Image (tube, rainbow, N blue to C red):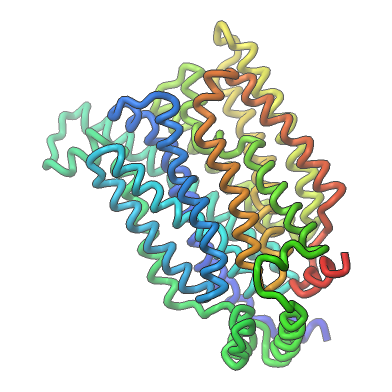
Length: 473
């Protein structure tokens, strides 16, 4: 019987839907990471201090906070698919606007627009994937979103490096280009770095025409016939009918369809756990490394070009580690991945702090050592919290308010991310690199404790089983 059930699953179709939705994650990653290669150029051109540079980086994250606040509610009202379309439009507008910005005020404005797109995608893409997935592969499929983010990071780092080298080659060869090409690709190369995002944003917009609405959202809106047709294509007709009945049963048990449901016993616990993990994850430093990696490497005496080259390795390890995590997450479970990965992060952060302390007065240890330590840190982070947090947030809430609940947890995540993006330049100056990385190491300890004591194992359970678990918690 189990074999027949397995054979009825249309995994090719499910994978296609997941990849399309995960393109939102690619844009999230690109939009977030591209900033790392533009900080020096923009700060120099507009004569920015540490706080202003932090604002340039943090402005997109501020937009992300706004995006997560409205995304879930809008998706509960209008559906997951229309909101994904909106995010694609926001990404496109941001890319083109940033490339053409005449001053720092317009640049920050369009970064905020892109940030809203990031916030929307960070909520709706994994939510959509979780709602069209089959239970035994849901962890891996939702993890495709995180993989897409890491590919977006790597893509941004590679584009930044390639455009920087191209600009330097043109300068050396005195290759005279026409006005706007010279401006965008040589004199102010940060413009082409930011503008290149328009290409994948357009691809995302086009592919969204080929995916259906979430079947679980359709059931909430009493569109059972449409939902059954989509579920049948995903799982086969017999399984789809049973799934439809189970989802309808769970939806009927949810007597409230508003935020107050989140504060009921059981759901309240899930919400607090989600918020805590989302905030703590940011204060363990991953986004400080991903945003400011080139600036951190330049503290070792590396040139801007070499620092961007090192950052490509960071992006590559991020992708490889995420692939490993996707392979493991449904095999060994969410909690074990966190234990292993965060332990690696903790040790790596302490060693990075020691590296900067030893090299405080002179470069006793070569820069490649720092690269190795940061790659170990990124490996630990990518195989654990970066993947698991999105899976957990997409699993632990009831169908009727899942979008709103993910917005609540996503809001917390982006508040933490904004604070890290805004404060890292100031913290690097005030605490020194040593103090900053020790702070990140300290934050690993409560994360491990919460996972050990409060987070249940959700591997292999259907969304309805997880929901029932919280209701009886």
